[in-house]
Length: 246
Image (cartoon, rainbow, N blue to C red):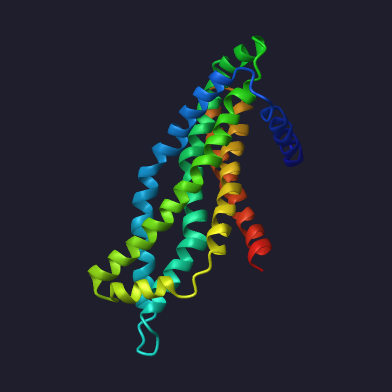
């Protein structure tokens, strides 16, 4: 199957996904389950990585700007920009693409090879609407909060790293955080997060829903889903940066 066919099949899938749920109560229960599986269960890894990566960014910035002519407040400024603009929305989304993307593909792929999706279709249920739409809404709803948390923890991790290492003071770091703060940067980061969330929810769903074969095919589809989700996030990041910041 050519790439153009995959693109067409992907958009056809989206057309079936975005329809009114047939049973709102069942849909609501599925949505709560997806919020837990895709969002709440990802809190731990995002919090852990954000804190320590924020510390690493601050330490590396301090070591590279070790000059008496450069104020220490610039460390906080650079760390703030790096974390808000790229680390939190992009790097964390790539991590979620690996963790969540593989889960989505494997779960839908297993349902496909065990004929559970076929059974839903035989009963006249729109399986794409039932299985994929809750994942999209859960990702779009929860991931912006996850990225805001990653920003806060990353910046806090930078402050802790500076205080413990003695490379810069906490007061200078806070001054750098307050210097030339632009609220649009938060809007830019959350806009990217919404686009990335949609990609993370739909691309793995496509690979899992249309998988053919057995358990080996499900494993291959999971790998392809993570690879293509990561590629699309990187490409979308470049396009959104060109559109929103230049």
